[in-house]
Image: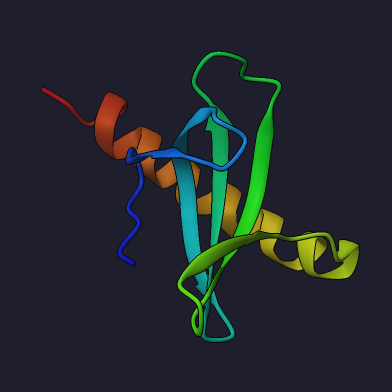
Length: 86
C-alpha cells in the first residue's frame, strides 16, 4: 500500500481522513491522519506489512519517538505546498 501526504482514506469507522504526515521509522511506515469533518479526531497508525492493514499505535514510548519526526515532515509539507509557492 502506497500512502502519501494529502491522500484521503476512508477507515473502518466510516470516516474520511487526510494524511497529514507519514514516515518510515525502523523499517515501518507510520501515518498521521486527521478526520476531514472533525479536526479533533486524529489517528496515528502503522501499516502492517504482512496484512497491508493500518493498525492504531498505542505505545506511548513509540509515540514520543515518532511524533517529532511526523511533525518535522508535516512542517516540510506545509512549506512546500504553501510558503514556497510563487
